[in-house]
Amino acid sequence: MVMPRVLGTLLLLLLLLLASGMQTEPPEPPRSICLGLSDLAGHYDNLGLNDAAECSRKCQPGKSDTCNVGNLQSYWLNYETHLVEENKTNTVNMSFVKVLVQNFNTNLSEDLHFSLEPSQIPMQVTAKGEDKPPNGVRLPRSLFRSLPGNRSVVRLAITILDISPGNLFKGSQLSLGDGSHVLNNRLVGLSVGQTPVTGLPEPLELVFSHQDQRNMTFTCVFWDVTKGPTGDWSSKGCFTEHKAQRTICHCDHLTFFTLLLRPVLDKATVQALTRISQAGCGVSMVFLAFTIVLYIALRFSRQRFKSEDAPKIHVALSVSLFLLNLAFLVNVGSGSQGSHAACWVRGGILHYFLLCTFTWMGLEAFHLYLLVIRVFNTYFGHYFLKLSLVGWGLPALMVIGTGSANSYGHYTIRDKENRTSLELCWFQEQPAALYITVHGYFLLTFLFGSMVLALVAWKIFTLSSATAGKEQGQNRKGLVTVLGLSSLVGVTWGLAVLTPLGLSTVYIFALFNSLQGVFIFCWFAILYFPSQSTTSSSSGTARLDQAHSVSHE
Image (cartoon, rainbow, N blue to C red; front, side, top):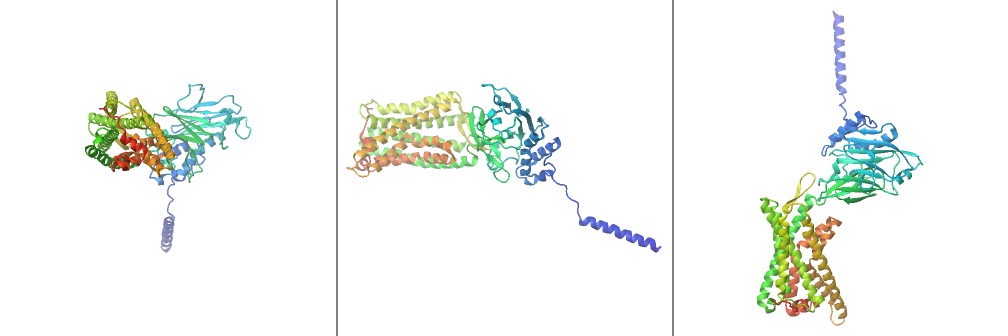
């Protein structure tokens, strides 16, 4: 009886020890392939490729615990090298990656052309003249001759990789949340194995077809593994050539390329520029109103104001600019609310007063030409009446013609995420009327005004140098005169030409252009308000502006 009890006790103790030992070493949790990728590195069979593609889809923004971005990117970047060195596979046709691997003689007699359609495996094509694929690559024959090693045959891999809209191949330029993205989420890879190819004597050409997007900029970039901890996009060694509905990349090396799309103005920038413009326009309206009131007061107090044309032209410009600022504030404030007909009317009104402003700035330049350059034979019957017919009538004719083509409507700037950056009533598309009546008309009036202003400045400073010994401060007075006249002919609008240089010039344009009314008021007050003697001493041009009269109404 004792022996069975002892054996039972020993058996029970043994079971307890085993149980306690199992508790001290908890089971190892299952490893995440997407986090470590230790099971995928170097495995490029169909199973490994599918696992890597699944990890790429799981690698979403804000979910850093679901994948290892650096390892995933290295996996795909090394894939081409693996295919070239393996020397077995010729094509890969999977939904997320398509590859062509082919041997070529380095002593080629002509360039190589390949089609890069996203739904097909890259294929070699014969492209002569304009008969080129919409998406493709041209490899110059000099590329193969410049490869090191004096090889007679080289193995080339061309890859189309779908990176999915996740964290892969983001870099600093795509992590800003401003709508920047890679065209169609696809990369194009070119490789000849482990041999790096850089500094090509003749660049290769990559062609990306796309719809024209007026709110986006297109830049040719490649993935630079030397930038940052996991790499970043770079445009070094690449030149971007823009064509209608396609972009051509000229690059001097082999790697993974793509087309980077970035918004011209993101939502935050548009809102900041809108606030600056609204504040500037509000201040301008106040000073333009002062200008108009000052003119009315001087017209009643000074008899010559009833016959002089120069102040009338200044006030006509002030009225058109005041109404333009008012139309802009109303348009931006109300957005595209209301019916299509109401939006059509608001767009037409904004267009009309913009053209009136351009026209009166051109008429200011014309009057300045008669005043200072031509001087003699400047008699015109009903002069100001004729100027008014041009200043208010010509824009009306252009707006009627534009409106009859149904060009006005809702205008919206959106980013890739369909977020609205700006909404107002304007041209609903980019028809020819916009380029002709806005861009072309502005350039015409601006160039004319700039030429007249340059001639006037030359005449003023020539006069200043001739009388330098007789009157002190002539250069300073001449500079003040030129600055004042520049506000009348719309030099601040010319800053729009510089806006492609960068965002800083956009802010400068928005600030100075919205304050044009303040500059006009300052010039008007200096010219007419203090006294006849003070004004006449400011410059020769000021004296002419006050004394000259061509009104014969």
